Length: 141
Image 1: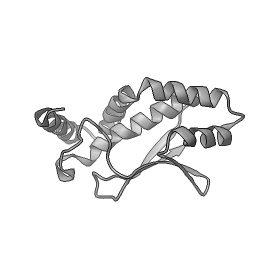
Image 2: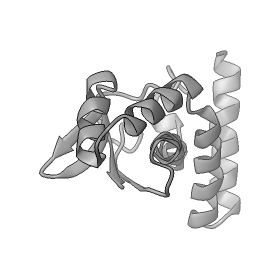
Image 3: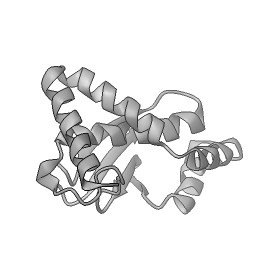
């Protein structure tokens, strides 16, 4: 993706953030993330869920193919050591609005909701864009 397009994306997010309330901005970006979730991963998670005896088995098996999945003290997390989003890859961290990470919230929600067939909650814990050492999202099934 060109630097110009990446800068344009960052500008759009800044304008959405500036011209909407926090909840509306988050919903818009989550919706974008839902559309970005790869159908191949969604299909794989659906297959794993359907062939699992329950949520614990599903999570264990999903963790074998989705290495960002971590279970810590019974809580489910999706953790990335860096931002992998191709839309903004290479943009300096300070040039991307923190609100952009709501896109990842939508991406993760889409994958899990499609797999298990019911709503899930995804919370941003920390992100590289917001100055964290990693991107960490808590998934509440």
